[in-house]
Image 1 (cartoon, rainbow, N blue to C red):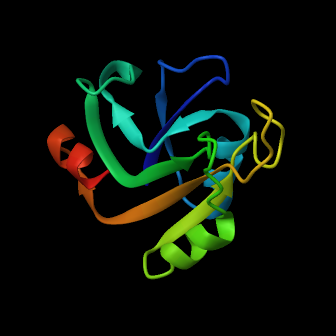
Image 2 (image 1 turned 180 degrees about the vertical axis):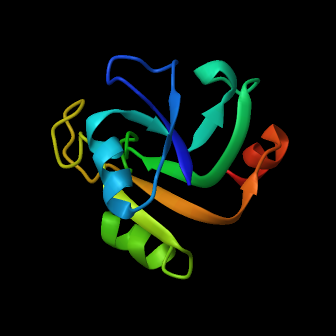
Image 3 (image 1 turned 90 degrees about the vertical axis):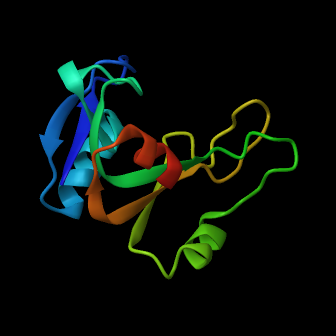
Length: 122
C-alpha cells in the first residue's frame, strides 16, 4: 500500500511511501503528516489526487457536546478492516477540553484512482 507523507510543519507537499506493515504505518503516522492518498507532483490537492487504498476519518471532538470515544469507534467499525490511531492531541487539553482525538483508517478492497470515487467513498 502507498500513502503520502510530509514533514510535520508542511501540510501540502506529500511524497509517496510504500507501507508494508502496520509498523511502517505507525512509524509514519507518529513522525510526519500523512495522507492516505497519493498525489501528482507530490502536491496534495483534490485536483492532484491519483490513488488511495484506504481512507481516514479524523475525530477531533471539537464541538461543545462532542465526546465520541475510541471504544465507541472500535464498536462502530468492528465489521470493517480498520485501525484506530490516537492523534497527537488525544486526551490533551485543546480549547479548554480534554477528550479522545483519533483517526479511523479504513482499508479499501480496491484501489481508488478517480477523485470523484474517492470523495464519494470518503
